[in-house]
Length: 388
Image (cartoon, rainbow, N blue to C red; front, side, top):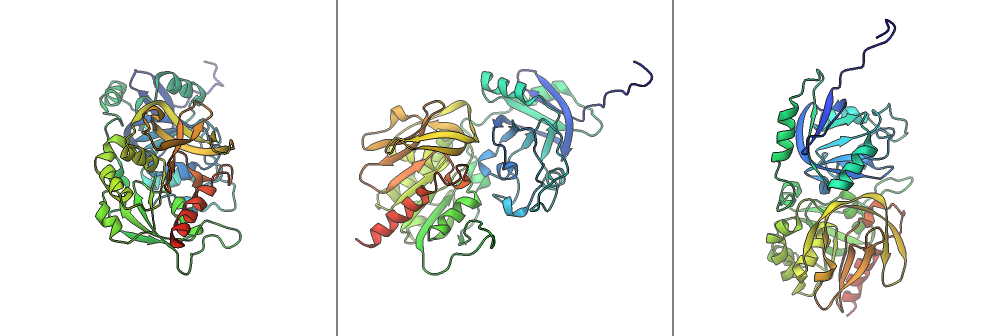
């Protein structure tokens, strides 16, 4: 090596895949190790919302967009009180933020929240690996001294049980009931409160994002949130005019062990019902359909979905590793939306009843308002029942 050359910096983080592949990079955020499923997300914005989305429990997120951290962080963008995703993988090391809304830096935020990040990774190569072999199990480690036991990390990745059969909704759900009246952010006021009488809606929290609750409030819903394990009796005791099933993580079949009986009990009361993401899968299971694990799932903010009733194509935000098998939908339940990427199911509705759900996230507004009509549709179903 020439005298003028500088030695390469020693890696301070590594990502070990269960197949033995190891990626080295520069660590940031918290130190230590974490084991999880590895997925990739193609969104160009919203990294803070992604890291705090409870649907990412048990997952490390690879961001395909290279400039992550460039707008910093702000408490206004948290979807829950603390990050739920196990860690993050990026191409470029996070830079100093440049945005008028920023109240802090991503690296400091991750450190304070106990989440690990790794930069300097060839995310295109890693994304190809995820697509080819399916979402792999990984061990992510950050050590400022660069000391790693690679054999042990690979062994931990291989030993991790994975998401199939794993109920994570209980881990991210609220533990007690609470009310929600905050509406969506609007210039120049920011977040404001809904006032006056509203539609009485019970939201079941399988890992609810705050912005979903804000959208419900924005269409006139007076929302009471209940834990994931709430029974049909718990729900109906509040005399709801509508019931909402939230997003969430894990295997829907595992969560369905306690969620399906509750949903079936609500359906028997003929109450308007709306579900998103895991809530969509829970409704499908309650109606008699089945769910299956996807190869690498759908994670991003540019997923085209076709509404079969109108032919309209919506640009949607998605985050799911399981999907409803449309071939198992029973009689009386119709498919309403499909992915234009792979034809997978993205929505269902019960014939003749105000019961429907979608796989994607209409509250994330990537369109930006392509899918907000779903919240209005839910509110209209409640209003129509009032006039009967």
